[in-house]
Amino acid sequence: GEAAAPLAVVLPFAASGGGSARSSRRAGARLAAAGLGAPAAAALGLRWWPEAVGNGCLEGQRTIRCEAQAHILEGSGAFVEANLMGLHKKGLVQPGEWHVVTLYPPMSLRKVYDTARYFWNIIRPAVPVKVWNAREAEAREGLPKAEFFQKYGFVLLNRKTAMTAKDWNASAPITLDISHFTGIGMPKGVETPVTHVYAKEVEQIVRELLPDAKDLELDPYCARRGPGTKNPNYSFGPHQDYGLLADDWPLAGNDFRKRFAGPDCRGMMALNFWRPVLPMCGPVSKTPLAVCDPRTVKMEDIVATSIRWDEMPHHRMMTLAHDPEQRWYYYPDMTTDEVLIFKSFQHFKTQSGPELNTCFHTAFEVPNAPPGSEPRQSAEYRVRVWF
Image (cartoon, rainbow, N blue to C red; front, side, top):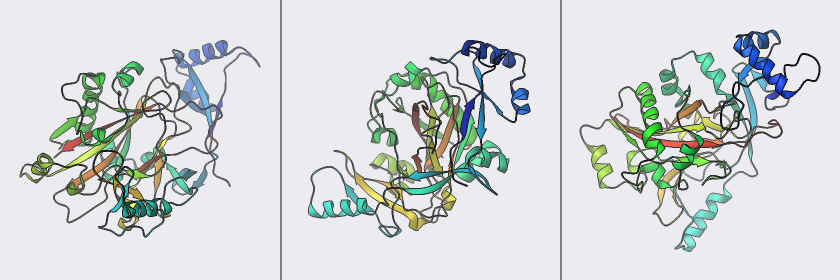
């Protein structure tokens, strides 16, 4: 009756009890070559899991992973109960207001007071939250990917990329900053593996999910997370990188405002392409990303924040007050062949006012993840889409 993570058990194929790991891999490879991997797993009531290949992973290696459903089961599927940090108590900000947080000088007594109130309002140490299996949600809905994306604000695609571990690192030379969100400060005319390879892959996906998209802004850099990267820590704390309206766009200048106000513009959107990347070998089992169904977030749950991190001016983003009706999802065991796309910003001129159609998101730790789980290596690539 307690929430727990999937129990992953690797069963080696050996002719008898014992046997070397090499012979187990050979046996597993023979099953794969014969097309018997999935049937053999099904006969044992297990799941046939193709592991990632390359960069330290054994070519052709396949293992069987037994996913014991220690998840609590309810009528709408399986979930893990995770502790989410950074959720707020309700009442700090009323709809239409923006709470000012200042983390960079110059400071005043008022700025210190407002910033302290913001952090005092966070629920500590954490809030236990059910995070539902999004793979099951997609299967249950039975919708085409584009329709699921429009309904939930996120979707998972099985898309291999031609990017290598070296390519990812070469395309992420700076820490995550405002340039990744807005394009302001991104170097012009820079050639990177992202411009040559990944941007093209991303554009194809955008055209499939949003066939009415007109123009795309594709940056030369992505952001990397994980040990050894410019962002070695994961972002634990539900947040949304933008505001609700075009007027909230971070550091919006005259060019942005003029373009959005123009007669040829119906609206714009920002998408986040989030995926595990090489040199990671196995699936993400310990620190995946959770996304919140925007339909389950009340406007009064939004903690609208005008924040200053560094020498750049204040800009608007959002954090979240906890409500038990909020519905969180994650995709268990994401691999480097999969990409999670979710909406980060959306404003169309047909709106009557502020609407939340985008996904709050956060990293979280899966309770009882397998010991020694491989640290997550991931990439984030944001695209601005005009309609």
